[in-house]
Amino acid sequence: MNRLFSFVFTFACLAIWSINSERAYVHDKLVRLEPFTDEHIHYLQALEETTSLDFWTEIMAPNRSVDVRIRANEYDQYVSQFKQYSLPYEIIVNDIQEVIDNEEKELAQDRLMRQIQSRWLGEAEPRIVGTYATYKQMETYLDEKAAADPTHIKVIDIGKTYEGRSIKVISIKMNPASTRNIWIDCGIHAREWITPATCIWSIEEFINEYNNRDPIIRQILDKWTVYVAPSLNPDGYEYSQTSGNRLWRKNRFPTNALCNGVDLNRNYPWKWNTGGASTSACSETYCGRSAGSEIETQNVVKFLESLKGTWDMYMSFHAYGQWWFTPYGYTTGLPKDYQKQLATAQAGANALTAVRGTKYAVGSISGLLYIASGSTCDWAYDSLGIKHSYTIELPPTQQQSNIGFVLPVSEAPAVCRETYVGMKEFLNKVHEDTAQ
Ligand SMILES: *[C@@H]1O[C@H](CO)[C@@H](O)[C@H](O)[C@H]1NC(C)=O
Ligand SMILES: [Zn+2]
Image (cartoon, rainbow, N blue to C red; front, side):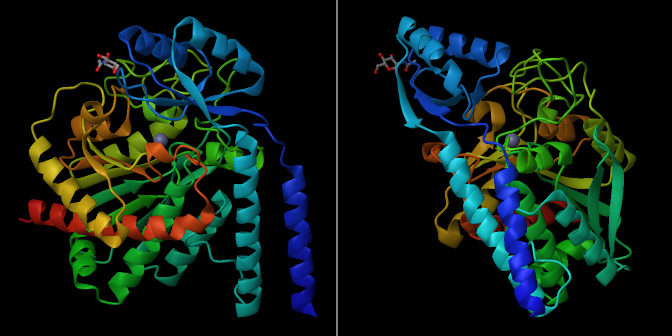
């Protein structure tokens, strides 16, 4: 009876939750542009810098396609501009809201199944490994991990967000004598939901595999304390989950009357605003009022700097595109450690691909893709001096832009699993490179 009641209750909650969310993307279109001249590229760069158009893929070079979301009420205006510039375009998704509605339905089902499972097993909380959890659920998960092994696992509150949430980092220190550290973060861009899921999956596997005496994980965790931050942008993440604005990217700082949010991955205090970032508040790549202006940035900077000199690896997860990036983003110049970084990243990517064929391209941000300044990766390498600093863009590929950020939750476990396998081999290689 009790179980039946909780089943009905849960179902009712989910129904209300679905009805509550507004639908912000009705008839918004995803359009693929085929720029073929330098003028096209300059025109698109100007759009990205000065408007709130939502570019899903990067503006690279002539003859490299660019996918952009265009709001329903702005569509005609932009199409007439494209025609004026002789810029070829095609519609890839006719109604983005439909894609989001489908994801939401699937996620509601997934949550319901997990609720039922937890009631059935008599567990207090539904399991969140392999799904898109709420920020609160992730906080609870971290606390449970620490409570289960307080000697080795701690949850650190590195500071508040603009809206007053705590940015939580879990530290896993299996060897009390270890003095070196590695860092993994996820979720700096709110809508990239697969990334917090990947961080949670990794925490679960690090702990389980260590306790199950996996030799490679033993070696890794006996050398390093691992710090994992499942979400560097909890305000944005919460907003993307609860407000109906599924595609929100930035933080929630109210910049002006028109537009909220700073792109935290353009706000880091190194080569700030030196290209590939915007100074207009409504742009999706708005870099903020000054270098490190955002409280979320400051908290991370403060924490990592407090342990400066002890870090052997920095990794930041993003979506999407299937890229494994090394520095730099701000310049096409390559760092002195590039060859070693490339080989290490390639080893990780190869191990990842071996799981089920998912292919990654490996190389520097600016070399493979575009100039982007103020990113965490350059800052970690240059300012903190972390030789092994990387950014990973998880699936899907750019060719699968009809999903883009809205990766169905049913695909999350497979993506998390292969990524973890790749990361394990990668860390093994970093370990070899940093062995005394
Ligand atoms: C792009 O493609 C067009 C048509 O195939 C070609 O004429 C042009 O040279 C290409 N531009 C570049 C920069 O490759
Ligand atoms: Zn991102």
